[in-house]
Length: 277
Image (cartoon, rainbow, N blue to C red; front, side, top):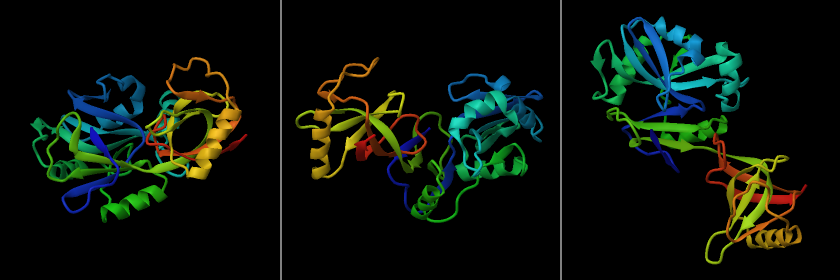
């Protein structure tokens, strides 16, 4: 499991790949059949029938392959929102992007260097199929991150090329996510003396809480925000747990928030602007 960092690692000794927005999964091929497991160890072979059939056709006796199951949008980008629909309705749209090889034909490869494991993995995956190889991105880390961001991708994963495969969290694999902006509805402001202020945000229309955003706007805008919150004071939303030092507001205030791309709820979010609906 890669560790989240603010910036990609610099210098040599690192390999960089696209961070795909899907379900981390593991393919196990053995005894003439293929199974697919989730990150938590659940057997989801029946949910990935077509991918399991494709894995069974690979020219290996047995193997354990680490990767990500994705579905692509019309621009060729992985689309997490459509993934669940594709699993139940569009099996033919699913792909398995392989990025590591733990075991092959009776040999445990986890003690080998990453670049050696990936070289072997690339050799057992045929191009153009449902199971694809995650290619390394050439170039300097900051330039790669800039291109990944401009392309609208979730982020990048950087791995030490000499690292062994270790289960669980590791600093040998680092993920750097890109930011995006979106419009949300303001639920209230959490403001406590001596601490940063946070705006509590919700999905527009549903008022479903999705997370908080650091109030990083300038002083003039902060003062305008406090005034607007006091003028629109209201009761807390239904099913919202109690939060100390929070001033709730009535529906009708929209906000633009910058946050990490590819997250279900807001993470590392900051308030950029707000206005009346």
